[in-house]
Length: 284
Image (cartoon, rainbow, N blue to C red; front, top):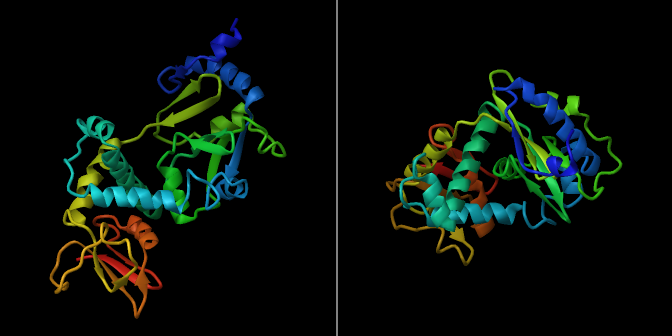
């Protein structure tokens, strides 16, 4: 027999390795879902409630720009490996943001090439949402404006009271993906997170490969730019032979600081040229 304290305590359920733990997981799910019902929503649903987009402070284009600027500032930082990544990102907010920028670029490329296999999850926090698992995926999806993609949202304040909550069976089925091990976590009785097997080695290695693509230097701007770009781009007299990432304006377009977010579409060996209406970004 469980008490409320049992249900409101952080607890893992390793249901792939220990299927017998799923019976207890169901009880925890049902307890949490009575307080904070889970819904399967789209990114567009969240945008409609100002949980993401230009009217939100956590998930928007300005936040994407912060990631890109941190990467440029940290372009020649200490090499990250699986062994030292936690230490480096824990000691420097700039390095942490640069790592997450690289992860967003990795995820955008994955979305384009093979798709993202796991559904992101979040919880309502007042007028905001907090997304986890999927802290970087939500930024990748917002950059792509993938408004039809799904998110599981645990609703703490009836933001989506007009929706029918997920049952345990419906929730569980979302995470049935072949050859992927999963485990659940009751996060202090607020929500149940489902975590899926992830290969972080590829993500960490992407930091250095992306730096190499940039030749460990700021992107080179060919054309006019607005004020405030000096910290984020470089200029040279003869650009044709310069290695690294080039940004070339079309016609008389004036490149803006906000345009830097489109560097997120680059990925080494996969997407090394991006053509937009007013400029081209490419690896030289």
